[in-house]
Amino acid sequence: AQKITQTQPGMFVQEKEAVTLDCTYDTSDPSYGLFWYKQPSSGEMIFLIYQGSYDQQNATEGRYSLNFQKARKSANLVISASQLGDSAMYFCAMREPNSGNTPLVFGKGTRLSVIA
Amino acid sequence: GAGVSQSPSNKVTEKGKDVELRCDPISGHTALYWYRQSLGQGLEFLIYFQGNSAPDKSGLPSDRFSAERTGGSVSTLTIQRTQQEDSAVYLCASSFRERNQPQHFGDGTRLSIL
Image (tube, rainbow over all chains, first blue to last red; front, side):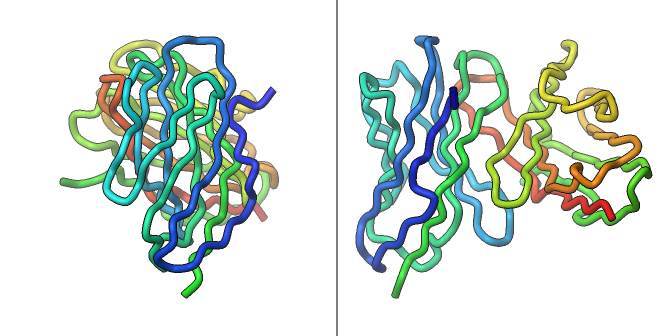
């Protein structure tokens, strides 16, 4: 079974609108960390936001927020006020257990296109 | 400060040749990871190093792949007798040990096997 599932291969959003990118995960470990990365066409992986499984509040970083629904095992990324520069691939990733350093498991990604 | 540095940025080689890919992590980061990204796919874990501990090699696809990390800093990923299916972008990342610290990625090495 896939650990990280991103069901939207591609998404379109109008500039200045908000968009939600879906991510569901599968784990039996109570301690895990969830990450979102952005990969523009230039190829670099840019860290956006982190949510720990024990965190009480949803993570926010500027225009990025994480809609963390633990019971549903979902960690959707919300981008508010989309900009043309947000066009990129977005990857959801999980680390389990969330202690020390363990490798990330990535989803297949969602390609977001922002339309002017 | 300086980010994760990878070299070369591009490598084209003939099938059957050996290649070495280099990664220079962010200073002070104790963990170093290698991932592979095939065209249009997510990232696939290959190997990771944490301090002086034995590396986790569980993601290496075959015994043609090996990696070392010298002095707890620079790492080299070696692929022997390259095959066409080895063509991919090889990404290196490093991080601090604390659990809420993200991995920071280099720009990758695009490897093409002819």
